[in-house]
Image (tube, rainbow, N blue to C red):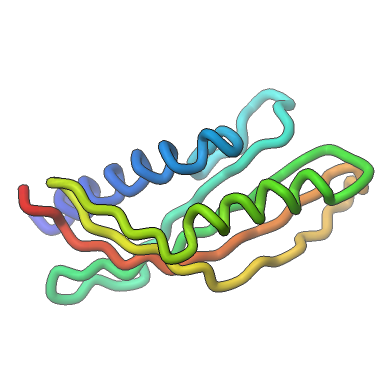
Amino acid sequence: YHKERTNQVIREIKKQLKLLIDPISNLAFETIPNTDIFPHVVGDLTIAYYKEGLYNILLDIDVWDKSTSTENVDIIAEKIIEVLDRCSFRNNQIIFTCWFTTLANIQSEDKTLKRKTIKFEVQARKGEN
């Protein structure tokens, strides 16, 4: 039962994050799009722990672009941070809050590939349903 409820919570968080981030840049989860679509944004959720109904989740969002400068990944990352930092969401399925923690530059062998990783902590509870 706990695992099923956890999966529901994760699915609902993904759905709401997608609604928040897609207007900035399309968000995918766990996998990089298999076509060369740039820029792209990939999110990954890891449950840090669950205790007494509270899920503590780590959210990593990678912003990728092929470009000579980091300007595009910088702008997308800044907009995502603006939208998600201290963002609180509530509906019948879920209640969650995101906090921005770190922004990292990731170096790539391919010098045309620019990447930033944004990290958030998410606290979530199951909603009223």
